[in-house]
Length: 123
Image (cartoon, rainbow, N blue to C red; front, side, top):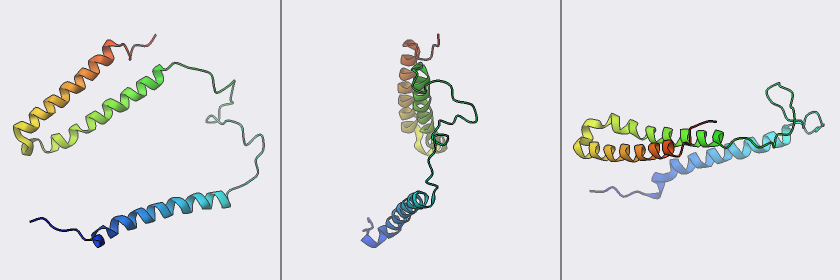
């Protein structure tokens, strides 16, 4: 038998959203009104971890940096999906194992595509 959910059952979720939103709004307003307002040319300069800025920050650089970062995130997130499977390996049985084989095959197809396109080769 399925339990019927009343609107009052969702009150904790609503309150959590309300408090989270209120915290964000309060913090943004407090920093805006209480923060310093004096803007000098020295304060508006770019700051690079204590190193003096040299040249223009808009100089183009290799797209390989972005590609490597995106591929890292992509494959890292896919590996995260393996953790719940590993925890519930015995309960999932053979169907769960076959589903993970399909998942791993798709992961390997993507990996071999990246290797074939030489996305990770640096000049």
